[in-house]
Length: 527
Image (cartoon, rainbow, N blue to C red; front, side, top):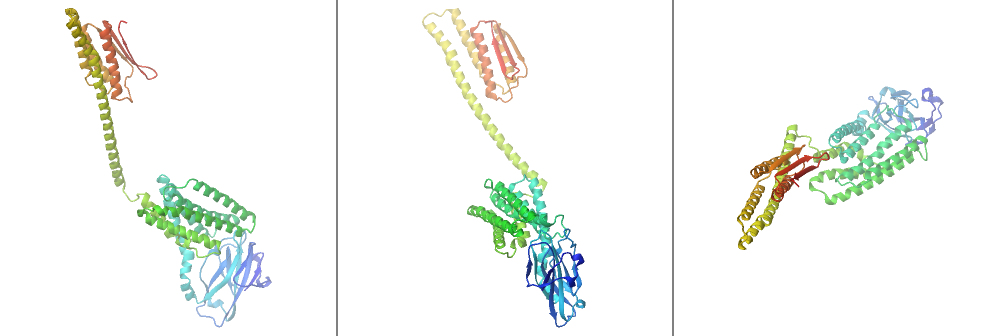
């Protein structure tokens, strides 16, 4: 193998380039631009079916020649508007008509901008076409078709979870799951976009933004998994992510320190730290693991384990990318675990209405029963208070008057007119007591109407004029039967006192609603 620098591929002349021998695998860091390599191999005879080659190249884009004949030329090569077809991994045919007995030459022209870390070329695999196609079928599927399937599924799941998140009250757990699926899918899509709108350091900064967002989403997903999140985990992790991303972007744009190697080290350390914190947050939840959620925790535990292994492998020189390979299955498992526990997607609207109607009926019955219990309690209290009032009236009113008449009779001081007046007073008091025992309406206007009729019928035979006036809206919203009964008793007692003690032939009653909402009651006699 030989390598050479070339300032411009458009005017490249193979004969004028200064090649130097190199060892494969060959790595050139860290300046962007163009590189050219020549690889030679020997053939004792040319196979009739030709050969096949699997290039192992690390560059943004490359071209492939066989014995000075161009075989592969995808996209654009002119900096800075290059395309990124270098991520294509495939088996290419070397036609028999271009091969020759003896020495054959493979030519590679590489290009990269300021975003990629370095040029890499390893020894290509050359052999029988059918054999190589079969041998690399699985690897080719994983690197190409499977990657497309993975991010397509991831983006669909992202859209689904986003819709559920927006329509389902925006739960934090589903929000972080949506962010996880989005960053994971976009990270895979990054390698499949041959002609993105961003190039160079900006394109690489976007890749780090998606890569570094993954451990943040994992940490917060584990934090909300048991429904008891630790405070400030989200704010601190997002702030750390923002600071790291700002630093990485600055390193890439202005080529600070070791450029991409420094950005790689910072990102991998950040990912490993958050992976450890995620496990620290997740493992204590297993001590109180609900049996019905064992499958959910198993899926999440597998995800976090793969995340920790991936972060450790990246920090120690790389290894199998188990996380990306398992991404579709893991995302499906996480989504299914969440939806099975939180969302009833498969019930018809009639079923949902029926369930809601049954729950509403149960709540209404419970509220009605509670209301009835409260009313019965209020009634019992009101009855007890009424009983005590009647006892006091009988003791202080009827009892006192009858005792006075009894003592006067025993002492011989019972003049017939005095005795008649005393007995009449007792009869009147008894009538008042009987009237007061009648039921009272729970509505204040109805209770006042009842009292008005009773008082008018009672005073008319006694020759006492009743002037009863009501003004304004007397509805007493927010007050129950106890308060209505209290107003009824106050008015009843005031009228009884005026009748018993004033000797007046006129009683005026005024009931009105004041401007400030208070209820004013006035009972007047002749002084």
